[in-house]
Amino acid sequence: MRKVDELLDNYSMDHQNPTNQKIHVICVPAIVWSVTALLWCIPSPHRDINPGIWGALAMFLAWAYYWRLSKSLSIGLLLSFTAAGFLNRWILYTYGIYVLFGLAIGVFIIAWIVQFIGHKIEGKRPSFLTDIVYLLVGPMWTLRKLYYRLGIKA
Image (cartoon, rainbow, N blue to C red; front, side):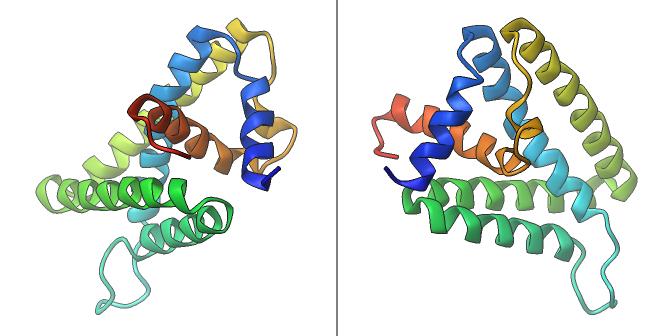
């Protein structure tokens, strides 16, 4: 069994309830976006370096981890990260850093509250409380659900 399959199967064991699954399909991408947006708000170390360097670096490091686990899923996650980067940049240059920061904080808090409600419904603790690596597995699990719907091999 591939390591990615083991991680995803273990994550799935904590997410059997259909309501909790639906919550995660919405909230996991929202949390991923909010984290990238929060990182986008950290000032760059030099004026010649574009805003968002910390967000881009974090997305690249996460993507490199995903690439080692699954080429197929990492391509989808790269597209997701790219979309998040464009959205962050657009919000930053259209509305300013305070709006980007405020949206990111709001989405982050609301999505986590809803996810904990989902786990209350499920009757199980979130997977990341067992092993922090499951914070990175959630986006792969969500994307794998989309891949299955589209008939794409994960």
